[in-house]
Length: 110
Image 1 (cartoon, helix red, strand yellow):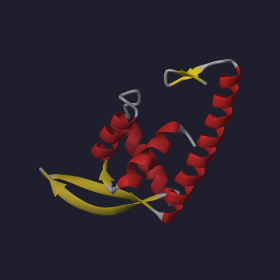
Image 2 (cartoon, one colour):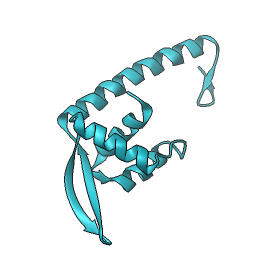
Image 3 (cartoon, one colour):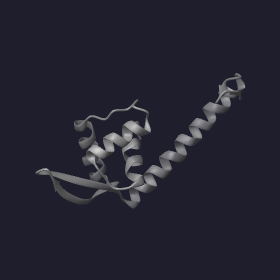
């Protein structure tokens, strides 16, 4: 799973969100490192809907514009959980190998 997909699913894991709220949450989660552009986000949302990982929860009109709220489906939740476990496993391996080199984590010697 690519990082933007992971981050979009993570943003939707907390609560249903509309597109701009997803963009803001991803920026917050990553400390500004990842800034999704609208075109990238909406293409991803369309793909995730087609894959059955998210669905439209509701739509509302705000200032004459349609705002669509998305939420995770059960398949999306399972996919995010699987990817989270995979990333955790990979991070554990990397961390243990860095510890062998004496790399410090969080200000203390690992």
